[in-house]
Image (cartoon, rainbow, N blue to C red):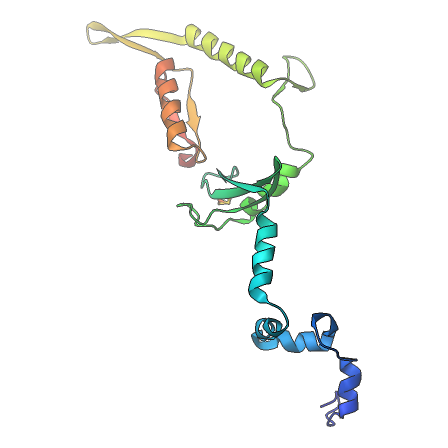
Length: 214
Ligand code: SF4
């Protein structure tokens, strides 16, 4: 039927469709819509293309020279698992990890945009330091940052060390500092948490917390 309800002629249909030849490139817009309506596209394309060959070829191209690594979302305490695809040392994609116990492949809107964070020109790539009284931040090396942190921990620990405490009439050893605390996160692995705990106890602090409990 045409737009005002009259039966369509064969000529009108031919004008709408345009010249028809064999093959995918000859499908006009009207035919394409017909094919896709009702899920017919897959069946119809199957007659024109060797679908399994195309699928295998695109899969091969997609994964060519790609290494995949598991990682976790850095945004919140859920710690959803992600898979990072790297080609020639460059991160090219990130997606939810279907095998991860926390999220089973799904990501929220923040996690799904993590790739944009990675490529952002505003992303900090080195530690920064603002000297006392200064009005600006300066980039410093990782070695410098680790050295500074170690010195501050040592200084704080020495200044606040509590060797003994009175318990009734007795003076008992406690060997601790109450001025240092450790904060773990949902992104840390069990192995990392084990090492954090070791480091915290060796430094003498009892204050070990987890980001997800706050
Ligand atoms: S994907 Fe969303 S819910 Fe999962 S860790 Fe990232 S921010 Fe949190």
